[in-house]
Length: 464
Image 1 (cartoon, rainbow, N blue to C red):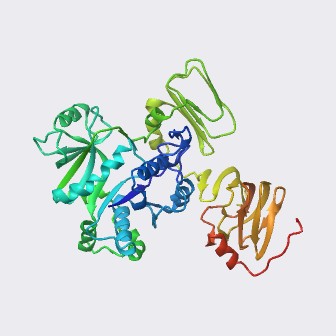
Image 2 (tube, rainbow, N blue to C red):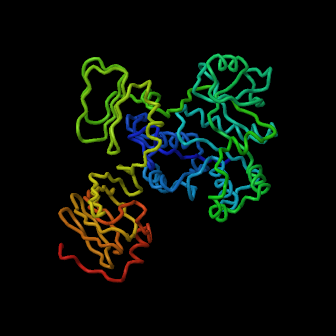
Image 3 (cartoon, helix red, strand yellow):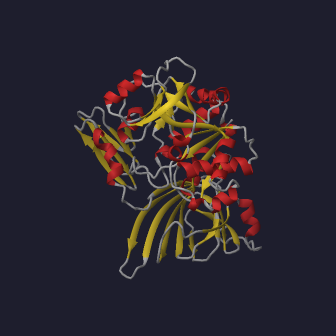
């Protein structure tokens, strides 16, 4: 059995902490068993590992999230990268071609697809192991996981079984689906043993490969990647689930939540104050999550969430917090904070002058032992000031040590990279006609490869 975790999201529902590259699953606001802060994706990966499934798991995601995944989960994670963001059907189809053509997975293998960010008991992942047996025993096209409802929620979708289904059956045959019903409809469906739809699909690999062949879609990963932009931008539910002839569902009885909004997420945050702040007076059921250095003070504000990051500040009563997705849907603000495989950066300042010249200032933190890619830029010049730490630099064929207090001038077209011997803080000032993250031509990532690619010039720095 192989597991594909889908990591998507545009970062609007938990703004301003989430953005285009740091979606909700990457926010480190939960606590693990030893009191350390962890993100949803770190929690899920830990649970998958504890269930003995991590060696068979892959993460499907967009290019924008690859470095964040490496930063939080390490570099050994198998990642299937979408050429562009589309929807769940093309994402799952891409994963299927990856498993089939690059991993040589058997066509009879069971593939389980699930979101990367459910808030569930660890037992949930042990239960997923039964999906393979359910598919074999039922002969169904698809096997879903459904959660036994604890109340008639209007926020979740429902899996409705055939009439007469009993609640204690090992698996049920699916009759239909109902998305976000009214409470009275939910009550009636629960009486018919309906389940919450938690977005988990299981199928034999040949089931999806056959669908791709029937629709003249590629089944080789490289070709699928080239034609990805032509794939229908539809959900897996629409393209596959609604057309399947026989679907069964495996009931799960235990905690399951979708922490997709501030009011649901804060229910699972142990402390009411994260970051620099003061809460005084009647502030019950109020949470402050502050990633800024400036303090936030709340006086007599119950039932409120305040979230602050370099991207902005949100102040909302909790009941209204889901509105933020709609309010921010047209915002195209660049992310002001990002985590990368090598560390993180924060935008400190941005200016655009009347003549069109742009100036962007960043604070970059490179973790000990990590390195930036070997790269150059076409549209900008950079000046780096090393604030703390020491490392080694490759710049235009020269290889030399750098330390706190050094200033480095990097012209456009200059090939450069840096490796941190200790954790390094760098202030980077960019100047140019268009300052965008896409203005990076990457030549190599591995430091050993970088040392081989650089021009064969190695000098001792006069800083020594």
